[in-house]
Picture 1: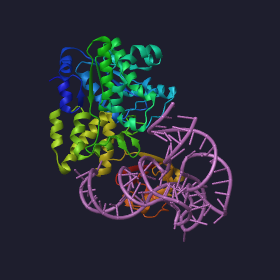
Picture 2: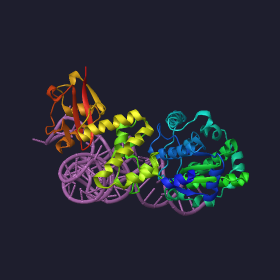
Picture 3: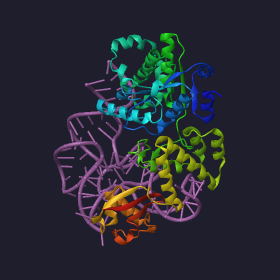
Length: 406
RNA sequence: GGAUGGGUUCCCGAGUGGCUAAAGGGAGCAGACUGUAAAUCUGCCGGCUCCGCCUUCGUUGGUUCGAAUCCAACCCCAUCCA
């Protein structure tokens, strides 16, 4: 079975420019391909995860991925799928973000011995000469066609700046550049990148009279079509400082029944037989599949040790067994004993504000050691601690262990 | 540069002098039901020293006992014209 078949079977692929030729390409040679990542934040998030999985699959099959960090394009901002213009980032921010991306990708993709490359398009884009670019590249783009592109449709109504309009051209230029530099023949990306990818494919075919290909993978959406990876705290980050492994684990543990099989196929390396077997589970049983999903995904993004800890914490909290050592913990000082629980938990950001804390308690949404807190004025008393720790539950499933720092 | 319309709380969107912390919807949160799921029902949904007070309706000034609502200037957005 070819890698492309594997990707198809697992449900990655959305569109391909030349399906048969791409399949042949992967059978006949070691293919260099690239995926671009815009450094809009200082961490990758689940949205990027899918692309990384694709790279990993292809790398395992002996092909060579290029991670292209958009240090240059990031200064412009991709208008695809955005209703509003993106905020512009400063050069320092972009550089910082690029470095963060790099670190995270290295955990996931093997960059030794040039088995994968990491590049930054700032390297060539920032040097471009405007008039030269217009003559070399601009001549190959039809504004009429660009305006008809899906990715600009929304923005045609809302307004699109010339700056953003050029994003497509820059991305096409990237592909051309990589084609020249590293014989990169294929660009991949999320399905929202389709127009941008085609632009590059066509540019290479025109300039070089050489074949170039494009492939998009499906966006990671829930069964309801919403983007996956949104949490109450914002995006689901891959950086443990921004989203703890425990929260990360819990996100997948709590996923919709309908999305379990899809996620197992896309976000883990479990064999498809196993994925299908787990996907068959119904009702209560499907929780077993969710546990596998959560564990596997956490293991990939963080590591086995963190995945295990997250799993243990979850089992201790929800299964009622095991020790609580790995539960998210808040340390308080000795002099906090006697203070109001409301004050301490607001200070520790368990509540967004005191008002929210009050509301929560009034509505019966806060428990300490499994007993509902009914008194807003309740204080943290010594008797509440067993073994120096106390368990707070906010809402249905947010747990915090509080320990006193000695 | 000119004309017109518009900028309201996380998002959409009502509101044209006091009854407005501001309708309605979405998102979110909590409770019930459950399987740490979905659906459904109920409540909440600016902040605080919370039966009271403070801050918010593009910005800054002004009119008024009182302004998101009226006036002025400015900024931004959309559409048409140049």
